[in-house]
Image (cartoon, rainbow, N blue to C red; front, side, top):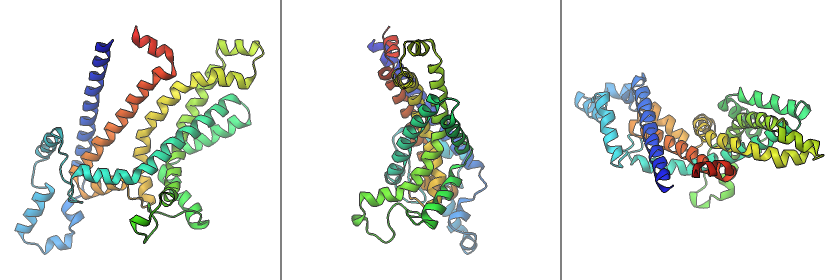
Length: 330
């Protein structure tokens, strides 16, 4: 039993390393193919024209423009395997330190969006499945399909225009009030500034959870044991809660943890709309500024977080469905 668990953990660890390596290689390849010149982007064409060849050579060495791409990637990979993710070229600080500070700014946003999208999507899916073919089902399906086809940044702009500009109920951007010292910022201030970006992220993530939960509940309610319960005189609500909830919980957990990658990806554009100083803005700055160490560091950390989320979902399967736990012990 213990040997089997160790073998499974070893396979998962190897998969995580391969995933992180492939993600880093893809990010490096895309940045290499980008037409953006880091010198012109960060120094400016006018400033470069007034510099001497020696100064330009120093800048090229700093930004790695004078080093072959393959050599740059393997040099970074060697340091990363030793625990050194390098130094950010834009922030002039260790990459892990930059990621930690930016992730601390995004944690309220990401947690609120992830939890709210899962809860709202699950409840709406259960409601639609319980009223299959009736007006709540049609309304929820129509809303989900509309949201699924709506880009996150467009929804963010709409929420910003309505609640931030027209109604003035919520701040239009940033993560803290403008001009306030960091020591004076309260938890309520941070949550208030995170409402609109978190709402934009969570609404776009509810569609898939809602539609999949609905389909699974419809399937469970059409099964033999649900029909037998109805024949015994059990109420519709009792069947949904006793039989449907158990059958829907497992795929809902899968979708919820799988949606973490979608939330991380969408946060890049949403944070740009709201000028939210988090990990998404740092990703955009690293890509446009040619900050290779920071971009690869963010890619690897994000891939590890997504893999860890899916791994936790696998562990929770046995708690939700005892049949899986018993099957693993055989």
